[in-house]
Amino acid sequence: MTYVKPKTHKKKRSYEDRRLGRDNKRITQDINIYRWFAIFIKCALELEDYNEIFKVRGKNYKVKFNRNHKWWKLIDLNRFPKTNTYTTRHKRLIQQRYRSEKIPTQMKKLSDEFWFKYKHLFVEKSTLINAPSKSVPKGYDTLHIPPNYPIMKILSDIRKFYSGKEVKLSSGRKKKSDKGQEGYNADIVLGDSNEQLMRRLFHTLSISQHWGHFQGRKFKNTYTSLDVYFNVQKRMDKSFVIPKIQRVNATGAIGSRTTTTRGKYESKIRMTQRDIRWSKILIINLCNGVFPKIDKII
Image (tube, rainbow, N blue to C red; front, side, top):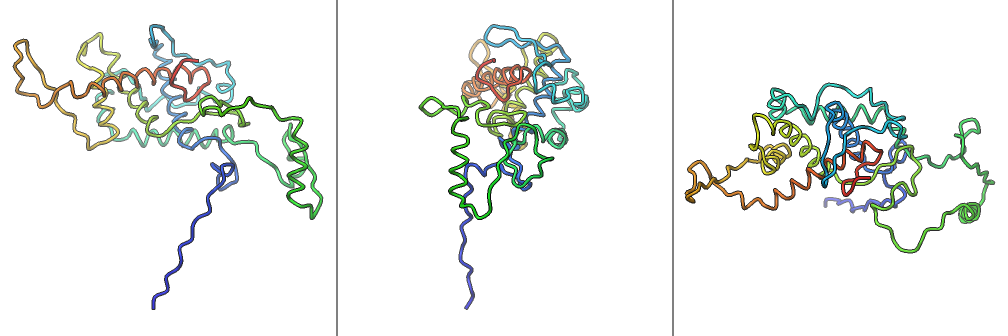
């Protein structure tokens, strides 16, 4: 008779234990947010070098970092690599970049180097237990607990100690997007997002910037929002096949080189136009020390 080991359910982690690493250091957001933070900083630096001006909802915004902001005093923008550009304006490099399989590798290298160097800025200042007095950072409260003191009494004492320091919030649950830096004490606190959206906005920004620069030149009126959508999908899914769009002449005859119609993609066109706007807002807010905020310009 074969012995079957009973299944054991993994204990669910509490909310407070989320994003607590193996080194017991806590970060406020998912690791991917910090990686995209580095990549979009690189994109914004390139656009700043081009003296790029974004038009959003009828207003012009110059892409320029506010270097007086705390973030850009802690992060050395001059140390970002000048190579592996994601918003290049050179036609030859554009063609190479579209076919390049190295983009994910380059992005990973950039983000990993950034994380290794600046991780300390995103780590929460957490509780120190039995730390030597000399190693306690400035600003920490010191608590001394007697031996064999019950945990419930310890918690009671701590609650009493902090009762006069708590900030009373108004009733009602706040939306995640409204919380901002509330409850976090890391040097740099980022907002929340998801991996799929960040990937899509990055490729939308990259591709629209590649070709948008040439709209007034050789490629005028030849690269549309639908073309951006198709090429974004191609980058995100190598197996995606870009369809041919049906062309109808003045008499209504259908061209022989086409297989589908543009009308089927109206929702995709609107989504891409929105993503182009969102990616611009993301960059503008990033330069002013807010990330990743895409609904409005701060």
